[in-house]
Image 1: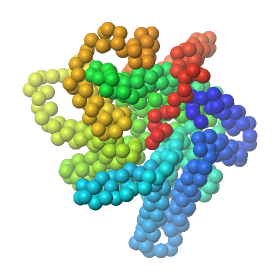
Image 2: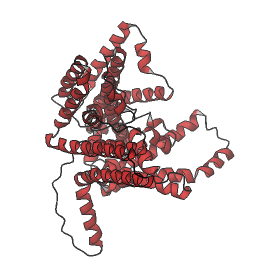
Image 3: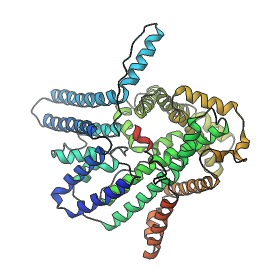
Length: 498
Protein backbone atom coordinates (compact mmCIF):
# COMPACT_ATOMS: atom_id res chain seq x y z
CA UNK A 1 0.00 0.00 0.00
CA UNK A 2 1.49 3.31 -1.08
CA UNK A 3 1.17 6.53 0.90
CA UNK A 4 0.28 8.28 -2.37
CA UNK A 5 -2.66 5.98 -3.10
CA UNK A 6 -6.39 6.16 -2.57
CA UNK A 7 -6.16 2.95 -0.53
CA UNK A 8 -3.99 4.66 2.07
CA UNK A 9 -6.24 7.74 2.17
CA UNK A 10 -9.07 5.36 3.15
CA UNK A 11 -6.96 3.07 5.36
CA UNK A 12 -5.29 5.67 7.56
CA UNK A 13 -8.39 7.57 8.85
CA UNK A 14 -10.01 4.23 9.74
CA UNK A 15 -6.92 3.18 11.69
CA UNK A 16 -6.83 6.51 13.56
CA UNK A 17 -10.54 6.56 14.41
CA UNK A 18 -10.59 3.01 15.74
CA UNK A 19 -7.29 3.46 17.61
CA UNK A 20 -8.62 6.36 19.66
CA UNK A 21 -12.05 4.76 20.10
CA UNK A 22 -11.04 1.39 21.57
CA UNK A 23 -9.88 0.70 25.16
CA UNK A 24 -6.21 1.14 26.09
CA UNK A 25 -5.49 -2.60 26.29
CA UNK A 26 -6.45 -3.14 22.67
CA UNK A 27 -4.63 -0.18 21.12
CA UNK A 28 -1.28 -1.85 20.40
CA UNK A 29 -3.06 -4.97 19.11
CA UNK A 30 -5.08 -2.85 16.70
CA UNK A 31 -1.95 -1.10 15.43
CA UNK A 32 -0.25 -4.48 15.04
CA UNK A 33 -3.12 -5.88 12.96
CA UNK A 34 -3.19 -2.68 10.90
CA UNK A 35 0.57 -2.83 10.34
CA UNK A 36 0.51 -6.44 9.16
CA UNK A 37 -2.42 -5.68 6.85
CA UNK A 38 -0.51 -2.67 5.50
CA UNK A 39 2.50 -4.87 4.70
CA UNK A 40 0.46 -7.75 3.30
CA UNK A 41 -1.05 -5.43 0.69
CA UNK A 42 2.21 -5.85 -1.27
CA UNK A 43 2.72 -9.59 -0.98
CA UNK A 44 0.94 -11.51 1.77
CA UNK A 45 3.33 -14.46 1.87
CA UNK A 46 6.36 -12.31 2.66
CA UNK A 47 4.80 -11.31 5.96
CA UNK A 48 6.25 -14.65 7.15
CA UNK A 49 9.75 -13.15 6.80
CA UNK A 50 8.72 -10.16 8.89
CA UNK A 51 7.26 -12.52 11.47
CA UNK A 52 10.40 -14.72 11.46
CA UNK A 53 12.68 -11.73 12.07
CA UNK A 54 10.39 -10.63 14.88
CA UNK A 55 10.38 -14.04 16.58
CA UNK A 56 14.16 -14.49 16.33
CA UNK A 57 15.02 -11.11 17.82
CA UNK A 58 12.26 -11.31 20.44
CA UNK A 59 13.56 -14.65 21.74
CA UNK A 60 17.14 -13.36 21.55
CA UNK A 61 16.25 -10.43 23.78
CA UNK A 62 14.61 -12.67 26.37
CA UNK A 63 17.57 -15.09 26.38
CA UNK A 64 20.09 -12.26 26.80
CA UNK A 65 18.08 -10.88 29.71
CA UNK A 66 17.83 -14.30 31.33
CA UNK A 67 21.58 -14.92 30.99
CA UNK A 68 22.31 -11.47 32.43
CA UNK A 69 20.26 -12.32 35.52
CA UNK A 70 21.64 -15.86 35.86
CA UNK A 71 24.13 -17.09 38.45
CA UNK A 72 26.84 -17.81 35.88
CA UNK A 73 30.25 -16.20 36.16
CA UNK A 74 30.91 -12.93 34.36
CA UNK A 75 33.03 -14.56 31.66
CA UNK A 76 30.49 -17.25 30.89
CA UNK A 77 27.62 -14.76 30.85
CA UNK A 78 29.44 -12.58 28.32
CA UNK A 79 30.29 -15.57 26.15
CA UNK A 80 26.70 -16.83 26.16
CA UNK A 81 25.28 -13.38 25.39
CA UNK A 82 27.69 -12.97 22.48
CA UNK A 83 26.60 -16.34 21.13
CA UNK A 84 22.95 -15.22 21.26
CA UNK A 85 23.78 -11.95 19.48
CA UNK A 86 25.81 -13.80 16.85
CA UNK A 87 22.95 -16.24 16.27
CA UNK A 88 20.42 -13.42 15.93
CA UNK A 89 22.63 -11.52 13.47
CA UNK A 90 23.56 -14.64 11.48
CA UNK A 91 19.96 -15.81 11.05
CA UNK A 92 18.54 -12.37 10.18
CA UNK A 93 21.38 -11.41 7.86
CA UNK A 94 21.20 -14.90 6.33
CA UNK A 95 17.58 -14.28 5.36
CA UNK A 96 18.50 -10.84 4.03
CA UNK A 97 21.43 -12.30 2.08
CA UNK A 98 19.32 -14.94 0.38
CA UNK A 99 16.58 -12.60 -0.78
CA UNK A 100 18.75 -9.60 -1.63
CA UNK A 101 22.25 -10.80 -2.46
CA UNK A 102 22.17 -14.46 -3.53
CA UNK A 103 22.09 -13.87 -7.28
CA UNK A 104 24.63 -11.03 -6.99
CA UNK A 105 27.02 -13.20 -4.96
CA UNK A 106 26.79 -16.17 -7.35
CA UNK A 107 27.23 -13.94 -10.38
CA UNK A 108 30.25 -12.23 -8.79
CA UNK A 109 31.78 -15.61 -7.92
CA UNK A 110 31.30 -16.80 -11.51
CA UNK A 111 33.07 -13.69 -12.84
CA UNK A 112 36.01 -14.12 -10.47
CA UNK A 113 36.41 -17.77 -11.41
CA UNK A 114 36.14 -16.87 -15.09
CA UNK A 115 39.21 -14.71 -14.59
CA UNK A 116 41.06 -17.89 -13.65
CA UNK A 117 39.55 -19.73 -16.65
CA UNK A 118 37.19 -21.73 -14.45
CA UNK A 119 33.66 -22.07 -15.83
CA UNK A 120 30.87 -22.02 -13.25
CA UNK A 121 27.30 -22.67 -14.32
CA UNK A 122 25.32 -20.39 -12.04
CA UNK A 123 21.65 -21.25 -11.53
CA UNK A 124 19.33 -18.25 -11.75
CA UNK A 125 17.19 -17.97 -8.62
CA UNK A 126 13.82 -16.38 -9.25
CA UNK A 127 13.80 -14.32 -6.05
CA UNK A 128 11.49 -11.36 -5.45
CA UNK A 129 12.97 -8.83 -3.04
CA UNK A 130 10.51 -8.34 -0.16
CA UNK A 131 9.58 -4.70 0.34
CA UNK A 132 11.33 -3.08 3.31
CA UNK A 133 13.37 -6.15 4.31
CA UNK A 134 16.58 -4.14 4.81
CA UNK A 135 14.81 -1.61 7.01
CA UNK A 136 12.95 -3.92 9.38
CA UNK A 137 15.92 -6.32 9.57
CA UNK A 138 18.23 -3.53 10.74
CA UNK A 139 15.61 -2.24 13.18
CA UNK A 140 15.14 -5.69 14.71
CA UNK A 141 18.91 -6.28 14.92
CA UNK A 142 19.43 -2.96 16.69
CA UNK A 143 17.05 -4.18 19.41
CA UNK A 144 19.16 -7.33 19.93
CA UNK A 145 22.33 -5.26 20.25
CA UNK A 146 20.70 -2.68 22.53
CA UNK A 147 19.50 -5.41 24.91
CA UNK A 148 22.98 -6.95 24.86
CA UNK A 149 24.56 -3.59 25.73
CA UNK A 150 21.99 -2.95 28.44
CA UNK A 151 20.74 0.19 26.70
CA UNK A 152 17.13 -1.01 26.62
CA UNK A 153 15.00 -3.60 28.36
CA UNK A 154 13.98 -6.96 26.95
CA UNK A 155 10.33 -6.58 25.95
CA UNK A 156 8.23 -9.35 27.51
CA UNK A 157 5.04 -8.60 25.58
CA UNK A 158 5.45 -10.29 22.19
CA UNK A 159 2.65 -8.33 20.52
CA UNK A 160 4.10 -4.99 21.61
CA UNK A 161 7.52 -6.03 20.36
CA UNK A 162 6.03 -7.23 17.07
CA UNK A 163 4.48 -3.78 16.68
CA UNK A 164 7.90 -2.20 17.24
CA UNK A 165 9.30 -4.17 14.28
CA UNK A 166 6.28 -3.69 12.01
CA UNK A 167 4.86 -0.22 12.90
CA UNK A 168 3.29 0.66 9.55
CA UNK A 169 4.22 4.35 9.03
CA UNK A 170 7.95 3.58 8.97
CA UNK A 171 7.90 -0.14 8.18
CA UNK A 172 9.05 -0.27 4.57
CA UNK A 173 11.36 2.74 4.18
CA UNK A 174 12.23 4.02 7.63
CA UNK A 175 13.28 5.93 9.53
CA UNK A 176 15.05 2.95 11.13
CA UNK A 177 13.89 3.40 14.69
CA UNK A 178 15.71 2.40 17.89
CA UNK A 179 14.10 0.42 20.65
CA UNK A 180 15.20 3.12 23.11
CA UNK A 181 12.69 5.43 21.44
CA UNK A 182 9.92 3.56 19.64
CA UNK A 183 9.51 0.62 22.03
CA UNK A 184 9.01 3.03 24.91
CA UNK A 185 6.64 5.14 22.83
CA UNK A 186 4.50 2.10 22.04
CA UNK A 187 4.48 0.93 25.67
CA UNK A 188 2.17 3.81 26.62
CA UNK A 189 -1.27 3.90 24.91
CA UNK A 190 -1.92 7.36 23.51
CA UNK A 191 -4.87 9.67 23.93
CA UNK A 192 -5.95 11.94 21.14
CA UNK A 193 -3.97 15.18 21.21
CA UNK A 194 -5.35 17.85 18.91
CA UNK A 195 -2.07 19.80 18.77
CA UNK A 196 -0.07 16.72 17.79
CA UNK A 197 -2.71 15.70 15.26
CA UNK A 198 -2.65 19.14 13.69
CA UNK A 199 1.15 19.15 13.51
CA UNK A 200 1.11 15.62 12.09
CA UNK A 201 -1.36 16.60 9.40
CA UNK A 202 0.86 19.51 8.31
CA UNK A 203 3.83 17.16 8.18
CA UNK A 204 1.88 14.78 5.97
CA UNK A 205 0.89 17.63 3.64
CA UNK A 206 4.53 18.65 3.31
CA UNK A 207 5.51 15.04 2.62
CA UNK A 208 2.86 14.70 -0.09
CA UNK A 209 4.08 17.95 -1.66
CA UNK A 210 7.65 16.63 -1.77
CA UNK A 211 6.59 13.30 -3.25
CA UNK A 212 3.82 13.90 -5.76
CA UNK A 213 4.43 17.53 -6.73
CA UNK A 214 8.24 17.58 -6.81
CA UNK A 215 9.74 14.07 -6.90
CA UNK A 216 7.23 12.46 -9.25
CA UNK A 217 7.36 15.43 -11.61
CA UNK A 218 11.17 15.28 -11.76
CA UNK A 219 10.93 11.50 -12.31
CA UNK A 220 9.20 12.05 -15.67
CA UNK A 221 12.21 13.97 -16.97
CA UNK A 222 14.96 11.90 -15.29
CA UNK A 223 13.45 8.57 -16.37
CA UNK A 224 13.25 9.80 -19.97
CA UNK A 225 16.91 10.86 -20.06
CA UNK A 226 18.41 7.97 -18.12
CA UNK A 227 16.12 5.49 -19.85
CA UNK A 228 17.84 6.22 -23.17
CA UNK A 229 21.00 8.15 -22.29
CA UNK A 230 22.54 7.63 -25.72
CA UNK A 231 19.71 9.65 -27.30
CA UNK A 232 20.00 12.46 -24.76
CA UNK A 233 23.73 13.19 -24.34
CA UNK A 234 25.73 15.96 -22.75
CA UNK A 235 23.76 18.69 -21.05
CA UNK A 236 20.60 16.59 -21.03
CA UNK A 237 22.39 14.14 -18.73
CA UNK A 238 23.95 16.90 -16.63
CA UNK A 239 20.57 18.50 -15.98
CA UNK A 240 18.93 15.12 -15.36
CA UNK A 241 21.62 14.26 -12.79
CA UNK A 242 21.18 17.59 -11.02
CA UNK A 243 17.44 17.06 -10.92
CA UNK A 244 17.85 13.46 -9.73
CA UNK A 245 19.58 14.82 -6.64
CA UNK A 246 16.35 16.67 -5.82
CA UNK A 247 14.17 13.75 -6.92
CA UNK A 248 15.73 11.24 -4.54
CA UNK A 249 15.78 13.80 -1.73
CA UNK A 250 12.11 14.75 -2.15
CA UNK A 251 11.07 11.13 -2.72
CA UNK A 252 12.80 9.72 0.36
CA UNK A 253 12.32 12.76 2.58
CA UNK A 254 8.69 12.84 1.46
CA UNK A 255 8.16 9.26 2.64
CA UNK A 256 9.89 9.93 5.96
CA UNK A 257 7.90 13.12 6.51
CA UNK A 258 4.58 11.39 5.80
CA UNK A 259 5.65 8.63 8.20
CA UNK A 260 6.52 11.17 10.90
CA UNK A 261 3.21 12.94 10.38
CA UNK A 262 1.12 9.75 10.44
CA UNK A 263 2.84 8.61 13.63
CA UNK A 264 2.43 12.07 15.18
CA UNK A 265 -1.33 11.94 14.58
CA UNK A 266 -1.34 8.65 16.51
CA UNK A 267 0.56 10.40 19.31
CA UNK A 268 3.87 8.65 18.55
CA UNK A 269 7.14 10.50 17.88
CA UNK A 270 9.62 9.14 15.34
CA UNK A 271 13.16 10.35 14.78
CA UNK A 272 13.98 12.93 12.10
CA UNK A 273 15.59 11.40 9.02
CA UNK A 274 16.68 14.51 7.07
CA UNK A 275 17.98 17.91 8.08
CA UNK A 276 18.44 20.13 5.01
CA UNK A 277 21.32 18.01 3.62
CA UNK A 278 21.91 19.99 0.44
CA UNK A 279 22.80 23.06 2.50
CA UNK A 280 25.79 21.19 3.95
CA UNK A 281 29.28 22.70 3.65
CA UNK A 282 31.13 19.36 3.62
CA UNK A 283 30.42 15.79 2.58
CA UNK A 284 30.83 14.68 6.21
CA UNK A 285 28.19 17.22 7.23
CA UNK A 286 25.94 16.01 4.42
CA UNK A 287 26.03 12.46 5.84
CA UNK A 288 25.17 13.76 9.28
CA UNK A 289 22.00 15.20 7.73
CA UNK A 290 21.02 12.61 5.09
CA UNK A 291 19.15 9.42 6.05
CA UNK A 292 20.21 10.08 9.62
CA UNK A 293 18.64 6.92 11.01
CA UNK A 294 20.78 4.69 8.76
CA UNK A 295 23.93 6.78 9.18
CA UNK A 296 23.63 6.62 12.97
CA UNK A 297 22.86 2.87 12.74
CA UNK A 298 26.12 2.21 10.92
CA UNK A 299 27.97 4.49 13.33
CA UNK A 300 26.64 2.77 16.47
CA UNK A 301 26.64 -0.84 15.28
CA UNK A 302 29.56 -0.99 12.83
CA UNK A 303 31.89 2.02 12.92
CA UNK A 304 32.29 2.22 16.71
CA UNK A 305 32.59 -1.58 17.22
CA UNK A 306 35.33 -1.57 14.56
CA UNK A 307 37.23 0.90 16.69
CA UNK A 308 35.91 4.17 15.30
CA UNK A 309 38.58 6.83 15.58
CA UNK A 310 40.14 5.36 18.72
CA UNK A 311 42.89 3.31 17.04
CA UNK A 312 44.80 5.85 15.05
CA UNK A 313 44.20 7.87 11.92
CA UNK A 314 44.91 5.08 9.45
CA UNK A 315 42.47 2.72 11.17
CA UNK A 316 39.90 5.51 11.33
CA UNK A 317 40.11 6.01 7.55
CA UNK A 318 39.85 2.26 6.98
CA UNK A 319 36.81 2.00 9.25
CA UNK A 320 35.10 4.90 7.49
CA UNK A 321 35.73 3.44 4.04
CA UNK A 322 34.46 0.04 5.14
CA UNK A 323 31.28 1.53 6.60
CA UNK A 324 30.50 3.39 3.37
CA UNK A 325 31.24 0.38 1.20
CA UNK A 326 28.85 -1.68 3.35
CA UNK A 327 26.33 1.15 3.17
CA UNK A 328 26.54 1.04 -0.62
CA UNK A 329 25.99 -2.73 -0.58
CA UNK A 330 23.04 -2.24 1.81
CA UNK A 331 21.37 -0.07 -0.82
CA UNK A 332 21.53 -2.70 -3.53
CA UNK A 333 23.12 -5.90 -4.78
CA UNK A 334 25.02 -4.17 -7.54
CA UNK A 335 28.59 -3.04 -8.07
CA UNK A 336 27.50 0.51 -8.88
CA UNK A 337 26.04 0.91 -5.39
CA UNK A 338 29.33 -0.19 -3.86
CA UNK A 339 31.15 2.40 -5.99
CA UNK A 340 28.64 5.03 -4.86
CA UNK A 341 29.31 4.18 -1.22
CA UNK A 342 33.06 4.03 -1.77
CA UNK A 343 33.06 7.46 -3.42
CA UNK A 344 31.31 9.03 -0.44
CA UNK A 345 33.73 7.37 1.93
CA UNK A 346 36.70 8.49 -0.18
CA UNK A 347 35.43 12.09 -0.21
CA UNK A 348 35.53 12.14 3.59
CA UNK A 349 38.91 10.45 3.94
CA UNK A 350 40.49 12.84 1.42
CA UNK A 351 38.74 15.76 3.12
CA UNK A 352 40.35 14.88 6.45
CA UNK A 353 43.78 14.28 4.90
CA UNK A 354 43.79 17.59 3.02
CA UNK A 355 42.26 19.66 5.83
CA UNK A 356 45.59 21.11 7.11
CA UNK A 357 46.55 22.16 3.57
CA UNK A 358 43.18 23.79 3.01
CA UNK A 359 43.39 25.58 6.35
CA UNK A 360 46.80 27.05 5.44
CA UNK A 361 45.50 28.05 2.01
CA UNK A 362 42.51 29.87 3.49
CA UNK A 363 44.79 31.67 5.93
CA UNK A 364 47.32 32.62 3.23
CA UNK A 365 44.58 34.01 0.96
CA UNK A 366 42.92 35.75 3.92
CA UNK A 367 39.54 34.24 3.17
CA UNK A 368 36.64 34.69 5.54
CA UNK A 369 35.03 31.29 6.09
CA UNK A 370 31.99 32.93 7.64
CA UNK A 371 31.25 35.08 4.60
CA UNK A 372 28.21 34.27 2.48
CA UNK A 373 30.29 33.82 -0.68
CA UNK A 374 32.71 31.40 0.93
CA UNK A 375 29.91 29.33 2.45
CA UNK A 376 27.99 29.32 -0.83
CA UNK A 377 31.08 28.10 -2.71
CA UNK A 378 31.62 25.28 -0.21
CA UNK A 379 27.95 24.37 -0.41
CA UNK A 380 28.09 24.24 -4.21
CA UNK A 381 31.27 22.16 -4.13
CA UNK A 382 29.71 19.67 -1.73
CA UNK A 383 26.62 19.41 -3.93
CA UNK A 384 28.75 18.71 -7.02
CA UNK A 385 30.62 15.90 -5.25
CA UNK A 386 27.42 14.32 -3.92
CA UNK A 387 25.63 14.74 -7.22
CA UNK A 388 28.49 13.08 -9.11
CA UNK A 389 28.16 10.04 -6.86
CA UNK A 390 24.41 9.92 -7.56
CA UNK A 391 25.24 8.94 -11.16
CA UNK A 392 26.34 5.51 -9.94
CA UNK A 393 23.23 5.32 -7.74
CA UNK A 394 20.82 6.11 -10.56
CA UNK A 395 22.44 4.31 -13.50
CA UNK A 396 21.22 0.80 -14.26
CA UNK A 397 24.72 -0.60 -13.79
CA UNK A 398 28.37 0.43 -13.44
CA UNK A 399 29.27 0.45 -17.14
CA UNK A 400 26.23 2.59 -17.91
CA UNK A 401 27.37 5.08 -15.26
CA UNK A 402 30.78 5.31 -16.95
CA UNK A 403 29.10 5.81 -20.32
CA UNK A 404 26.96 8.62 -18.88
CA UNK A 405 30.01 10.35 -17.36
CA UNK A 406 31.84 10.10 -20.70
CA UNK A 407 28.87 11.65 -22.50
CA UNK A 408 28.75 14.52 -19.99
CA UNK A 409 32.41 15.29 -20.62
CA UNK A 410 32.68 14.80 -24.36
CA UNK A 411 29.33 16.07 -25.68
CA UNK A 412 28.97 19.86 -25.54
CA UNK A 413 25.46 21.03 -26.32
CA UNK A 414 24.63 23.88 -23.91
CA UNK A 415 22.17 25.41 -26.39
CA UNK A 416 19.58 22.76 -25.49
CA UNK A 417 19.09 24.65 -22.22
CA UNK A 418 17.69 27.63 -24.13
CA UNK A 419 16.21 26.45 -27.44
CA UNK A 420 13.24 24.51 -26.04
CA UNK A 421 14.73 21.06 -26.62
CA UNK A 422 14.26 20.19 -22.94
CA UNK A 423 10.50 20.36 -23.38
CA UNK A 424 10.62 17.24 -25.55
CA UNK A 425 11.68 15.07 -22.59
CA UNK A 426 8.35 14.60 -20.85
CA UNK A 427 7.85 18.00 -19.21
CA UNK A 428 6.61 21.08 -21.04
CA UNK A 429 7.54 24.69 -20.25
CA UNK A 430 4.75 25.12 -17.68
CA UNK A 431 5.84 22.00 -15.79
CA UNK A 432 9.46 23.17 -15.76
CA UNK A 433 8.40 26.53 -14.33
CA UNK A 434 6.30 24.82 -11.67
CA UNK A 435 9.22 22.52 -10.89
CA UNK A 436 11.57 25.48 -10.48
CA UNK A 437 9.14 27.17 -8.09
CA UNK A 438 8.72 23.95 -6.11
CA UNK A 439 12.47 23.45 -5.71
CA UNK A 440 12.81 27.07 -4.52
CA UNK A 441 10.08 26.40 -1.95
CA UNK A 442 12.01 23.32 -0.82
CA UNK A 443 15.28 25.24 -0.47
CA UNK A 444 13.54 28.04 1.43
CA UNK A 445 11.99 25.53 3.83
CA UNK A 446 15.39 23.86 4.34
CA UNK A 447 17.02 27.24 4.95
CA UNK A 448 14.41 28.03 7.61
CA UNK A 449 15.01 24.63 9.17
CA UNK A 450 18.76 25.25 9.39
CA UNK A 451 18.06 28.63 10.97
CA UNK A 452 15.74 26.98 13.53
CA UNK A 453 12.70 28.82 12.13
CA UNK A 454 9.70 26.56 12.77
CA UNK A 455 7.36 27.26 9.83
CA UNK A 456 4.67 24.90 11.16
CA UNK A 457 4.63 26.75 14.48
CA UNK A 458 4.35 30.10 12.72
CA UNK A 459 1.36 28.82 10.75
CA UNK A 460 -0.31 27.37 13.83
CA UNK A 461 0.17 30.63 15.77
CA UNK A 462 -1.98 32.53 13.26
CA UNK A 463 -5.73 33.15 13.56
CA UNK A 464 -7.99 30.18 12.88
CA UNK A 465 -9.22 31.58 9.55
CA UNK A 466 -5.64 31.89 8.27
CA UNK A 467 -4.77 28.35 9.37
CA UNK A 468 -7.79 26.82 7.66
CA UNK A 469 -7.25 28.93 4.53
CA UNK A 470 -3.59 27.86 4.37
CA UNK A 471 -4.47 24.17 4.77
CA UNK A 472 -7.22 24.39 2.16
CA UNK A 473 -4.91 26.10 -0.33
CA UNK A 474 -2.14 23.56 0.36
CA UNK A 475 -4.48 20.62 -0.24
CA UNK A 476 -5.78 22.13 -3.45
CA UNK A 477 -2.26 22.92 -4.66
CA UNK A 478 -1.18 19.29 -4.11
CA UNK A 479 -4.31 17.92 -5.78
CA UNK A 480 -4.03 20.31 -8.71
CA UNK A 481 -0.28 20.05 -9.40
CA UNK A 482 0.54 16.60 -8.02
CA UNK A 483 1.35 13.77 -10.42
CA UNK A 484 -1.39 11.34 -9.50
CA UNK A 485 -4.74 10.04 -10.68
CA UNK A 486 -5.95 7.53 -13.30
CA UNK A 487 -3.82 9.04 -16.07
CA UNK A 488 -0.61 8.73 -14.04
CA UNK A 489 0.85 5.50 -12.72
CA UNK A 490 1.22 5.50 -8.95
CA UNK A 491 4.93 5.88 -8.36
CA UNK A 492 6.68 3.70 -5.82
CA UNK A 493 9.01 5.44 -3.41
CA UNK A 494 12.62 4.96 -4.56
CA UNK A 495 13.79 3.45 -1.28
CA UNK A 496 11.17 0.68 -1.44
CA UNK A 497 13.66 -1.26 -3.58
CA UNK A 498 16.16 -1.37 -0.73
